[in-house]
Every structure is written in structure tokens, then in C-alpha cells.
Length: 251
Image (cartoon, rainbow, N blue to C red):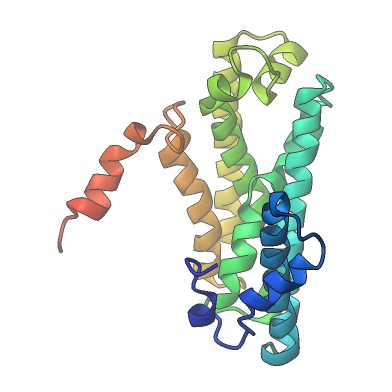
């Protein structure tokens, strides 16, 4: 816990690591169960932080936002779990159902729920709009999923051992692997058309908030557009990393 530096980053919380370990010791004192005591101590300290956030720090509005963040993370985990069962059990649903599940499994809503509340333009109306699963967010998540599936196909299929979304689409539509990859790129471009339409039509939503959502799918273009998994294979995006962080152009 010391590496997380909770007491520095969250000064209002009760820093009770030793006390939490003592609590964990009440479960089992045998030497071979030290890992259990450590796990209990960590869980208690994390829950203490949650408790202190609600009891001693957050306003009602902040507590609502914090709860929404936790709920968004739960949705991501449920989507991951559902997809894993489909793949491992070889029981893939319709491709449409697979993509709809990926809207929450793609992390956009979980990330946005944590970052957008800190933006200057945020309001109750914009938070409600974001939590309503707006079309621009759905299109952004789908575009990223199509590009991600194509680029990560070899890694996730484990040389054909498991079925992926690409495999399922190939079988459902009778296409070759290359035809399916081309189709996924086309589907991503279709989502971009909807993204651009929403950008033009959502005039009441602050532009910096829309930019935040667009930033998610723009990043997917950098990492996945070449049909190579740039997130898993650093060499794919090494040039971008150097150009932006190591040797940037100074204006």
C-alpha cells in the first residue's frame, strides 16, 4: 500500500494498514495463510477509503458521481465476463449482440465517467447526457471495437484455438479472413460518419466534452488502423511516442 501513497493522495482517509492486518489476523493465524491476511488487510483499507469518501469528504453530488464511476467499471467487467464465456464455451451469439455487448466492454464509458466530471464545462445536464448512452459514444465505442478486433485477431484467437468476433463474422457471412478485415474497416468508417453527424448536431453539448469522446476513437485509429495491435506491440506506435514525448516539435 505504501507504493500507492494513499495517505498523501487521499489525506482525508484513515490510514490503518497495520490495524487492517490485525483484523485480517483474526480470520486465520497459521503461517501458511499470510497471503490471506494481506488480502484481507488490503480489502479493508480500500473499503475504509470508500467509507471515508462517503462519510467525511464527498458532497451529495460528488458521491453520486463516484457511485456512477464504480457502476461503469462493473458494466465493463460484466461485458468482459460475458464475452469470455462466449469465446471459451464456443457459444457465440449473433454478431449484433456481440457488438452491442462490446459497447460497454470497450471502456469508453468507464473512462469518461472518471474524466469528464473534472472538466470545466461539466454540468448536471451533460453528466445525465453522458450516462444516457448517447449515439456519439456508441459510435465511438463500436468504431474502436471493429479496429481492435481486426488488429488483435491473431493474439486473441491463439492460432485458431478460440473463436473471436472476426471468426464469428466470417462464419456468419461466408467471408474470407481478408474480406472480413476489409469489412470491419468499412464498418468503422461508417461509425465515423455517425460521429461526424453527431458532432455537427449536438450543438448544446460543450465541444470539449465531444472532443473527449472523439479522442477515444482517434486513439484507436493510431493504435489499430494498420491492422496491427499497437497497444500490445509497442514498435507499431514507437514513432508516435518518440515524435510526441521524446523529440516533439517546439512551436
